[in-house]
Image (tube, rainbow over all chains, first blue to last red; front, side, top):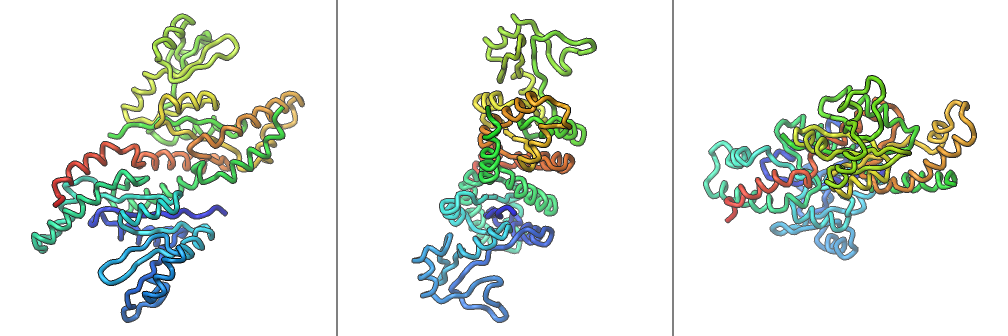
Length: 207
Length: 207
């Protein structure tokens, strides 16, 4: 069985990342969602290890010191991070791990795990992006200006990704993402053992 | 319409490259086979521009001097080469061009056209490769030894390819190759214009 691929999904807010990932997990068996560790308190009904691993601030800082997190960030008062052990267990079990994360986090993951696959999700056009960000006209001008400004920043990093995934139709987009990941499993750089095995075995054939 | 991809297919003899490519062209619309130019004489019924473009030795050497060939080689008495203009016309028309070629030629193509996609076709195991090379027991020991020796040489270059395509079942292999090529169309490096367009248009959004 071949090893899974760590797939990092980023993209414009309003690009429909969440829906695409939800459908990908429903539709295909070979994916696991990365579970983040956080210092925020569990909300009623939230179990440890499902949406999040809940840890104390001291425990989280211990994880940082042990280099047990692929990446982490602090939002408001709380830490959020991606535990290396969970990701590695899933990959070893042959499952592709999907990690939704914004661009700075994605760059940190690529640095620590160069074989991670970075996918950037975008609406087909800027006009469509703008339409989605503006929503149904119920947001304040300030909220819309903030969203547009953020999209402008996010676009700067698009060329750092491996694939650009255009989300026009959700089902098509999900199938296309799945095909990209399946195809990536055949990359020569992901099959070094197989190649070396064949090279070693056919060496005896040479004259 | 996006530009086509030049797909260079190599692999062990006995790996079923020919069958896979034939089925790919039958099954999907978006491919053209590269037509080689050669100095060998046309056989009865062979038309110019179908299996080959037939040219004189002088004309061929003129093509070499004009850098009009992506790669060329001499076998026995004759030249064989890949005309750049035909390939570029097809790519511009949005068709993927498939070029079956051995490893030295593939490396030359990659040098001249870095965005070419190199695919190496292999049986699933060396045991299976050996079985296919040995055939039905009707070949002489010398013929088999030559084939094995050639496979041993070919294996050395496997790691220079972008994808390793395992041919176990022909139809699955054809669909997988098609998916690889479709997926490659979404590579960020093949969508620089689209990315720059979005970056340029969203620049105005930033604060």
